[in-house]
Each structure stands twice: as structure tokens, then as C-alpha cells.
Length: 413
Image (cartoon, rainbow, N blue to C red; front, side):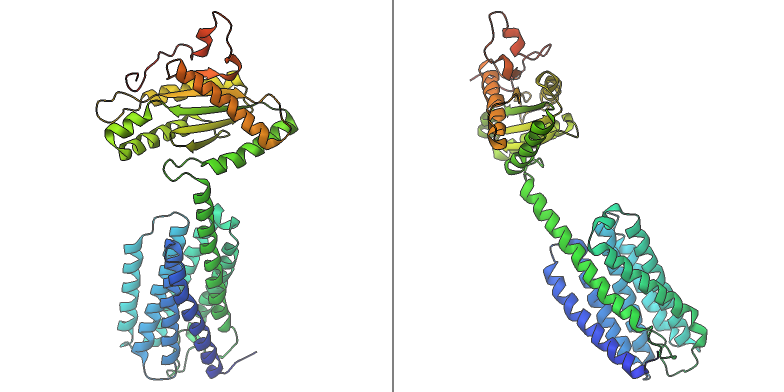
């Protein structure tokens, strides 16, 4: 099937006009997302450049067509930058901007050469093919791209673009009509030039999906993560706890809970200010995160109180984690000459009780919280086991972590 040149030009104008309007709107919608902003901006530049190239076809505005081709390449390079940002790779902004500027200057300079049209065609499509290939390779190397809904659409669009660009390079020798601009439009008038234009629309849609997925994921993460410490917040902890309790009901595997409170934290805030206190909380949260296992769930429960849930762990096994936390926190220097930080920890194991999962979780936390309170009463900077809450005479030593001297972060009030 063949289409007239004029028909192809009309379709080009329509497609690039649509992508220009869509991308301009996406620039505003995705302005808070760095990758999405680059994708949208790149499509704005490429779409505007495509309109310039289409307008220059059939006339004597070779310089305008070359400038449009260069601008189109700049837009595609901006889109490639967005892909790198999305996957957490170095942006290489200066390198890609410089490459785009050099290619644009070369295309304009080539208009003065005898075979300028063919050279413009070869260089423009060659650079575009390389950009498409880089984009495909970058996405295929990333596991996240395979999990994204929009990723396969973008990959498909770039595969079509790459095939079209390679085919255009292969047909470079067939250009005989000096009045025909070689970029985008072929003398044969075949229908295949419409395929890359449709691929541009598909790619824009895929990029929009990828950006929205990233925004949604960040919003969900923000709703689950405590902004100050980076640990889970209380709501996310409750959800995780109910799931772990359900697993305990199903499999009968041990589940333990550590409730952790920073000792004399109010004195830090009163003496050095809340900014200093926030810094101490962040350091303690990092110590907790570095002490736990990958399967453990760590959260900031509220204020200066933290909680760690330990699946497949009984109360005695959880004391190893409590000891690691005590040691790491003792290494945290307090502001000024306030000495070093310390925490008190209550440790409890889920042993039964109510049938409701929520009630079981509340019961487990309450047991650990009561043990924490007793650790505070016994001098802080230690852990207490929930099973030892009512000790027999002579068992007081079991309430303090073995072989760990007390080191309060400030003198006793």
C-alpha cells in the first residue's frame, strides 16, 4: 500500500500537533517528577521540531528542515535522559546536551554541501537509531522496567522507531528527487513512514504511565514511611503486624515484639532544641535499621518510641537483637557534652489469647510495652522480657541484659 506524499505530511502535522498539546499538558502535570518532566519536555521539543520539518518539505527551506531535524534529535536525547533518571542512572546532562548541540550545528552546516539533503538524512537517522538503541538497552537492563505497565509500551515504541530508522538509513541511496526533504518522508510514498509516528504516540502514552506509576508509588511510600526517620510509620506497622499475626495463627511460628523508647529524650529537646532532637532520632532509627534482620519489621510508633516485629523468633532469640540495639545506640553521641544516647527495651512473645488478629496484636504490644515500663523503672538502658515481668526472689538479674553495663544518656532526674 502506498500513500501520497501530501497525505503523509498531513498525518505528520496531525500527529505532531496532538503530541505537542499532550506533552505540553504533561509538562505541568509531571513537573514534580524529574523523569516525567524530562519525558514531557523532550516530547514538546520533538513534536515542535517535527512540525517544522513537515512544514519545510517540498519547499526550498533546507536550512529550516535541518534545524528542525536537529531540534527533533535534541528532544529525543532529552527523553533518553528521562529514561536514565527513571532507572537511577547518571543523567549525563552536559554530555547529552552537548551532543545534541553538535549534531544540530552539523546538520545546519551540511545544508551548504552538494549532497546536503542525503547527509542530513544519514546523520539524523543515524543519531536517532543510536538513541533508540541506547534507550532499549537501558530499559532491558533494568528489572524495574519489566514490572512497569508503561515500560513494555515504551519498549515496543522504540523497537518500531529503531526499525524505521534503520530502514531509512538503508534507503538513503534511493533518494533522487532534490526537492524532497529526506527526513521523515520517503520518495516511495509507502505507508511505513506512518508507523514511527504512531510509535511516538504509543511511547508518549507509555512514558505517561511510567511517570504516573512512579508518582503513585512514591505517594504510597510516603503514606507508609515516617518522614523523619525513614522507618515505617504506625499505620504501616499495624498492617504488617496483622499480617504477621495471621501467619502465626496459620503456621504457629514464633513472633516477638520489641518496644523501644529513647531514654530522657525530653532533656535533649529542652536543652538543645527540637532540631538536635530530630537528629538524635534519625541516628537511633538508623541504628535500629542496621541492627534488625531483613525479615524484621521496624517502625517509629510515635514520638521517641519505636517498635520492631521479629517473625520466626521467640523471646529468648529476640534478646540478641535487643543487645545489638543497646550497643549501637550507646555509640551515638548526644549534642554538646550530653554523653551518649541510650534506650530502654521491652521484649515480648505472642503466646495466645484473643482470637481476633487485631486484639492479638494489641495484646502483644501491650506485653512488650509493660516490659519497657519496667525497664525504665529499673534504671533504663536495658531490656526486660515480658515473661519475667513478675520475677521470683533472686531473679532480678534476669531483668537486665546480660554482660551489658548501664550507661544512661543523662543524669537521673
